[in-house]
Length: 196
Image (cartoon, rainbow, N blue to C red; front, side, top):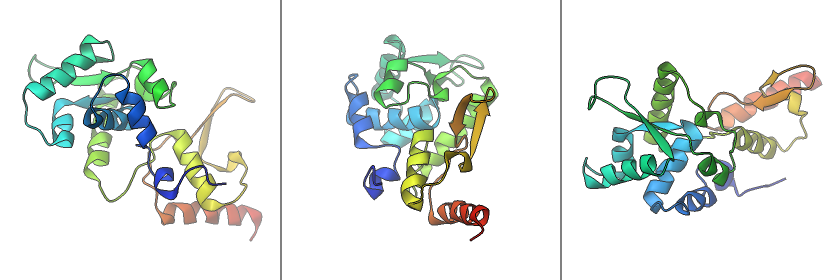
């Protein structure tokens, strides 16, 4: 059951997602960065955009941030003294809908501590060029369904259920970088349950 090519399967930052964000008036570079933000963190700081785009602080950065805030795509949050740090929370639902994640939890407001965790995760994702990261629940499930080539019951995948008895189920709450070890561990768990 191959839904995507192997490269697309391992990449939450697929070209169709980038193109969908570009339709909102962003350049290809800005759209690629925003897809990373939408999928992995929901928020970013200016330094992360500058590092991703390989640009210095200046008019390009200012214009990008101003476009996000003035169009209502994002909210600037200044947790400390003015001009001492500002994070940008991208919460515009149509952007998330464009990438196929209308109910992504990154869109929702969070505590400052949670934003700091998300910023650290985004730093790791942007800095790690050796792996592609599976950022969304759908990407993780599709990866393992395809990778394992097994019809495993969905209850065997890591998940959290909200409400009883048949409430909302969320799979793979943790971010993962796919590799063969993770697939082997999940396959081993399946084999152990089957008694193989």
